[in-house]
Image 1 (cartoon, rainbow, N blue to C red):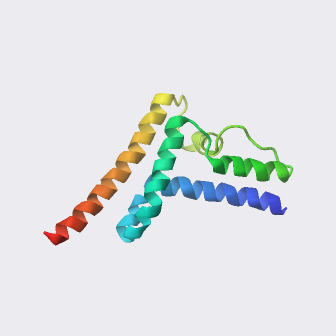
Image 2 (image 1 turned 90 degrees about the horizontal axis):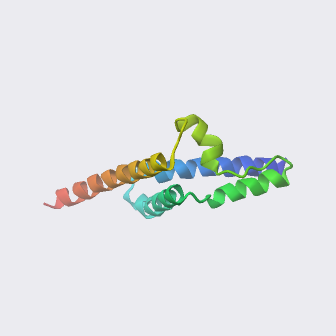
Length: 123
């Protein structure tokens, strides 16, 4: 029971991390210090998406699933839980690159706006 709950908790943490990596820059507009957490998270998320490697949280989820007697999975978290819901059928590597670029551009736009807002107040 505890290990099953740990697997579910790891899944929720993984989802929260993905959301934070993708759009956490919006929180920086509210609290600028969050940038020290969000920039590395966004960079890691882009790296995982571009490289096709599995996130360590995927391995943690598998560990708890197997220990709890539930079937683990070999594909990544995104492949198992998010792709069927979020990504269109026929996803190609090129589309993954495009999605990674969109995440990077969104964050760059947010940080660019933040820098403009900070430097604009001084002028």
